[in-house]
Image (cartoon, rainbow, N blue to C red):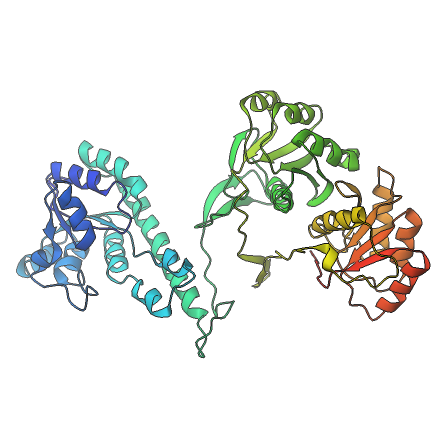
Length: 518
């Protein structure tokens, strides 16, 4: 590449920038910079030329115009091997800029602040930065463009070796357009939510989504389908997507689906909880004093279905639980962490996938739920609805639940929310007893829950994700041994269902909240 001419550096994220600038100077570059970046580099003893000195034009409009100048963009876009470009650059006194290091105003973190005003958001829309990045990326054959501080090291190594190869230049250019595309999408989404009356719409008029490919999967849902896993950029919630695989075979498409379902249900509980998922439905959920106790109880719900299941625990996995897990076939085990002894035990199973997701104590959960249609997309809030205290809910029946039944209702309701509708869950206060999922009629889900019950149903509560359209579902549950029901209510036949409960001395709690999961 020869001797470096100018390197323009303007960054909001100053991680590693001083060391990178120093390395560029040692390679012969003159550093051009502005504002806080120039101060940081100069303070570290690295010589800097202000952009205004280079262009001969001062910063104007309160810093809004600094780098929008022919000496900047001409230096970026001028093609070094094209005589006409070189001639015009010489005529206009434009010197080549060989390296551009830019990351943008923190628009995303600005709008994330609860007290962010519209005016503050607009002021954090970067203009010069994206313009320089796009110019440099377009002319990447001649200009090395850097948007990610993680690339500083390998770029310096390449420059020190003599040249940055074209393959790396193209990769860096691609990263620029991915970066600016996401940046523009964030701005478009924000502005698209601003209503004419000054309020904010929940859903933007046009939706921009940005995900990065994390993995090519062996295949999709079935072997004849291809698949890939993409990670949402900027997400900070503890999740499967942000997790780290410690051991085992590569995750499959179906593993990711089941693991996500398992972890999201495990996150519902403050107490020690273990969830076992099979074919995207919980087949066992339990609370316990320890992870191993919770796991044993969860597995006891349906040992047959638990074979080959996906397990999530909301506490670190210790050796006791690890020993139980390795006693049978498990596809995936997810936890905040694993003790050294547990990891050694679990790694005896060479195919067992182990995922660590970090602490779940930060229970902040938000964002959208998206489902792809052919030619479209449906979008909604995530179902984060929860009951603060079941004892404050409406009880229309003559008999009121006991304290134990209330506790069982609270537990069953949390599980039911994560079962495919029509959803029915039989449970006691700490353990699922039977799960009926995905049936076309509610009474069939009740019958399925009874059929799947491996433990006694007598004295259990029943949670239903939606109201009972007829009394037949309730009657079937009572016949199975259920003594208390928690359901949303809202049917035109609620009176009939309540009357049926009274006839059989069954207590009923109505939540007023539905949890369909299609």
